[in-house]
Picture 1 (cartoon, rainbow, N blue to C red):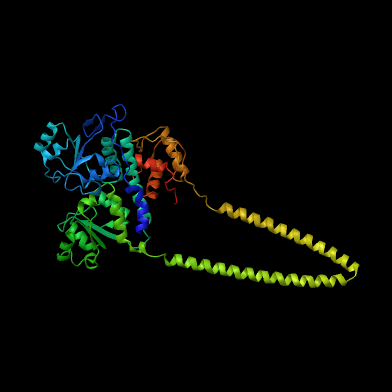
Picture 2: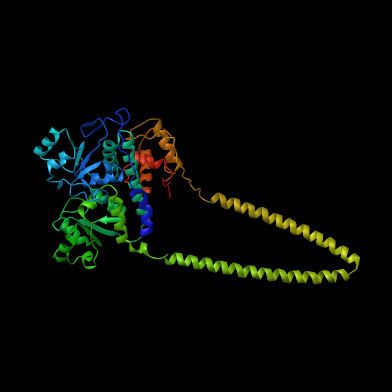
Length: 471
């Protein structure tokens, strides 16, 4: 399993190298984000949001981070100086880093913000993604600031698409099961949990697991105790509390040792950590992935061996039979030589007649066999061969939904039809039929099915990595 996951994650975990060379405003800047205008590429970024730091690292902009909060513990930036905690940073240390922008996970108090703005320092609060669409917007925004309005946005969207695609790849290696995998994530034992409308809930979905906490309604503690989840994931230090708690200690996950700690900040990060957390969870919940080839595969190997052995025996039998026939034929031929020439001539006539008759029978048999082969070939379902399609000029920020109409929609409909999703006429109008086809495409490719096409979904749809219908 480790080898499989390493292969799947190698592309998404390898941060691309991004240069810091100054770009003129005409090339990539100005960039407008969250009410701020960046006239040039930032030379110094202070990250007080470890999730944004994770995204910058994932997209190859780690070298722009000149200072960080204590929560930003990623290996790539561990040698960079800290400015204290995200909640109570040292303002003087932030100013000394001379940042062009400070990324925070929640708004500063008025006094801190005023001090930074007096130094002409932009402070941007980034909202964490709740789903794949939000993730694309988040990556696009962060990378636009760090890399520019064109190449930066493109890199962000490509990286978000890569993360989503890798999550889908990880999901596809999960073995099929008739049983639901029930899970939850606890920040504490008081009821602070991960709900389905967060990105953590999205990760559970990709792990083919049901989050027993559901949505923020009702008594969450009661939900957990009644559903008795098979696995409990939790923040650091919570496991010991669960084992001592009268409320949780008798749960199956606690008694079976299926309580796993994943630090809160790591679980919530939205860069490379997303796929790493998902792969760790899959390894834990589906240990059968580690097993040797299954019994079914072994059975196939044995069956293949038996078939080969049977084939060899049959071939040997045919050779022996052929040898006997040949010997018999020689004896008969010798006998015929002793007969009179008239008898020989008669025999030759009869033999010629039999040969012609045999030839006609064989020819008829071949025609019938050819006909049967053609008929069988016609009954086989056609296989959709997927190739990349560059007919649509996809641009950063491009999105399509019900009600839109233009030539691009025609191209989208044709692509959906080529992949087996769209069965109707090409009209150029994005209506309910198109939305239904898009939803089927999203489900097959492990995307939240909303019937709308975001930029990353368009890139995947027109790539050679998209899964066709009935895959």
